[in-house]
Length: 345
Image (cartoon, rainbow, N blue to C red; front, top):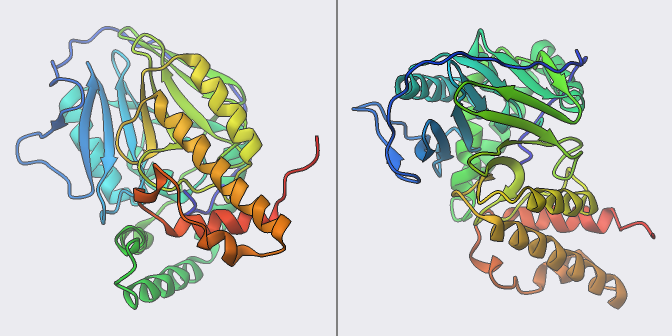
């Protein structure tokens, strides 16, 4: 989702992880929330997806904003995405290491948006991985955070004050959480870049399981990656998938997104952890495609009739999208589609 700044000078490479064998804890059944004694978070809830596989589902109003994941490879942990706030990322790291009792060895950033990468600094000692293009964009964001943090703080503060002036907005809880989490983290933020990059696939070979970082290009942003666990047929999708909320497409390319979703379907994963919303299934891929197609139809009909954006916005939201959260993104998405008509051929 675009709450972001991002990029960087790449160190291209492919690394193979060969962990040894260490005993693990036996987790609770798939999909159940996990609590570790009194250690819980108001920002996210951990959900067991398999033996040593956890999805951190962001809580409304919290400072995580995006979902994240943790995978036990054998003698170390692979983390997927790191939230918008480094202190929340520290909570996540603490909970995961207590559950799995192994260090975090790798972090995969799915894309450059700030709600997925600003917790990177919490994982000191781990190798941070992203696509080459994601690193390039993140490097540009780092320059602003490092050289002009006051302008970042001012922009976020102004946005928060605007949100607080309109508490009736049904999306205010999300955006207020983003702004407050962003402001809380800024004084001690060290915007941390990936140090390992890939351009197609990167395989993590563990004694417990294999995990694959995969990119099919860019659909949600200029470059998006997912984490696939072939034995478990589970994928951490990042923002290539939203469940129960309007996806944000205004930094992406709908045609490329559809192509990527086709490739994800071909993986035949049965469990899909989205970038936002509850854990989903392959059916949610079709719903995301249907949502974007409905927006495209609204724009095309408005163009044919000579009407504009407001006419497209006035069009009723079809099923099953009418009850999805984050309706504000519908305007952003329609504005993007009006400004970027599809090319012929």
